[in-house]
Image 1 (cartoon, rainbow, N blue to C red):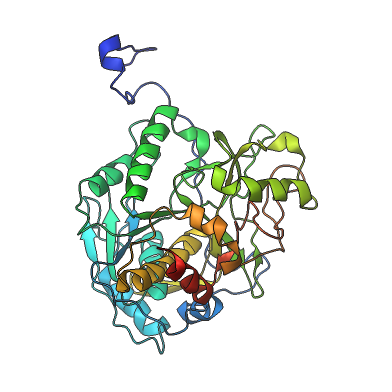
Image 2 (image 1 turned 180 degrees about the vertical axis):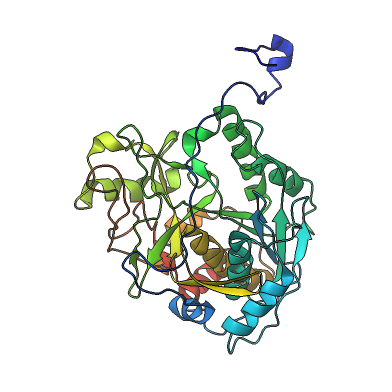
Length: 399
């Protein structure tokens, strides 16, 4: 049974955010995880040791601060198996003096016969970088009420909202998302409210930017959601050493959300000074620019179902990697009696020189390609990749 329209009494409508499901079933542009070999045929398979060196973490471990927790989210029947994390730890952690963590599982979608590469990637690498810190896997079944292909983000966020400050993780990394228009404006707006509620509680939300480059549909770039929300931190992707932007990394300018005050100068500088920009007809130059930061997005070794899988790639690699570093920064602050970092973006843009600026490479898109990396912020790598030592000094200067 279906209807072509619906309505609510005025006195009810003013207190209702959305009605779902209705009649809209838009197409989904879902990011992918690439495995096997890279596009130039190079065999992939680097692990935690390289990342810790690249981002100036070294053998540093957290755990000094009571109550510091990080977490990853799992949707779309992606399950985590503790035995895989233990095997990964043995293979990848080398001289890091931290035991394989015992991960707490939260939600109604955590269990399953087969582990997912996405789920294992997320939990393995948030712990590889954020070693020593209590870790959780939050998994949820079902789909979004407005699109049966999309993740039930509001279901997860409602649990976050109902979890006490003493128990809630201070970092969430999410490696899921889709094109901006695949969710209704009503659902997106309500989700943004939940994002803001988390931020003011001192919770940092990081989202992979996606693996579709700048995207292309009807001769326009396609911004992604939720990485493009003004109330989360979008994480783009790099590859190689020295690092450069990787073509698969999504990024660009939102059509629904305007450029934000904390990034306005950085975005303006990019649009006025970057070389070889795509034709303005492809994108909304007044929109919120994303991602905000980036991390490695190729060459990852993941253990799933006790099988080491080399060559996993995508910004699904980047988000848990960056989140692990941020979790260590929280640990440093909390150990000195300071607050957690919470909503990160104002701090990120005010302290861009504490990140490794990425100036080479570009993402894919319509026509001749997407956006080029450039000095300062760009819509592929954000302000750059984390430098733990510089960021540690910066966060300790904050109140």
